[in-house]
Amino acid sequence: MLTRKNILLGITGSIAAYKSVDLARRLMEEGASVNVVMTEAAARFISPYTLESVTGRPVHIDLFKDPFDHLNLPSETDLFIIAPATANTINKLSCGIADNLISNIWLAYEGKALIAPAMNARMYRNRLVQKNIKEMKKHGVDFVGPVSGSLACGEEDIGRMSEVPEIVEAAISALATKDLSGQKILVTAGPTIEPIDPVRYISNRSSGKMGYAVARAAVRRGADVTLISGPSHQKPVSGATLINIETASQMETALLKHLPKTTAVIMAAAVADFRPSSKANVKLDKKEVNALDLKKNTDILRKLGKMKRKFTLIGFAAETGNNVANAKNKLKNKNLDLIVLNDVTKKGAGFDVDTNIITIITKKGDVSEYPLMQKIKAVDVILDKIVELKK
Ligand code: CTP
Image (cartoon, rainbow, N blue to C red):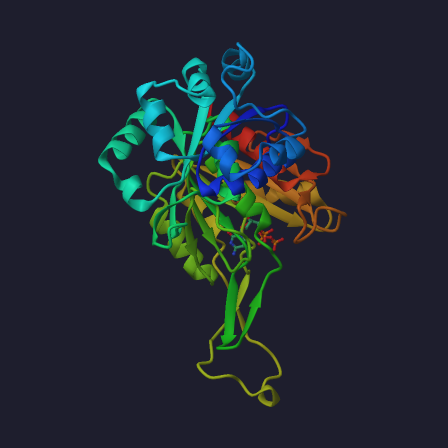
């Protein structure tokens, strides 16, 4: 997600600096080129040599080593991350004090910046620190964390630097085009489960990967996202409101509750079409069960299609043959604006994999077929189509 992006990673003097080595690696794994600039205090916590070995590039510390580092480094940078950022550095940057290489670069830098503070809780709550953070946010600087937990001083409180995956996510978000800002999007994901008795249920196959990827990409692109999820092992999407449900009926209730002011609904969930007609309150004796009596669940998407006024409605069709014709019928019958079709029998497009092969069909009848791609890329293609529809 960070291919061709140049990231300047500033490291200041906090014990959290040891995590910056991993941060540099993860940013590079996402495709970024990483240049490191450190304060002398940071170099007392971790060796510059470690970062040179990880990034394969020289680490910049001394303001006087190269007369133009403080001008050349920022001009080549897409995102300036300072992680960890101490209270001292935050206060200095906010006031424009330039007394080391990082603070000189800051003054000469005009691009996007992301700060991950790390400090003792009392220092973090200090009104000067708070005032300076507020001021920097007002000028468009992004912050990630700090979070609560055990601090180096032994206290349990706020002040820990965010974990590396959170900082990487914030970096990806900071660089994403915000073409969905102002949109309020409801995404459903995962299966629904329909109980037979307290220990058994029927369900659909679904890992939730596609729905969670849609939610993650929509947050990155600036949308206000509510994710309604059936049971799934996916990591919660930072920045999205997560509502956990189990049954189709609970999913329907949650959707209807959040529908007002929604601008798009993306139904990626594998909603169970049937439920046992009654749920036993005690575990059934298997000797006494020969057949299950089933009832049809509400087709939530169809119901939303009937209610549709202002929001854009997107459905998914997991097919196993006669694909485009079936998906076109669903699009029409459910009054959708767009349907995403995937043939689950194709290699790389099935369940619980990180890739998908999608075909997007719009209300106008346009059919676009895409090759095998990572789900996180496929969902951007879907969101691009939604942006087009909204124009
Ligand atoms: N869906 C829904 N409510 C249901 C079943 C499905 O909202 N009870 C939604 C899914 O979230 C998906 C879309 O409908 O976005 C397509 O699901 P699918 O099961 O393929 O649709 P059906 O019309 O039930 O398909 P079929 O007739 O092939 O069973």
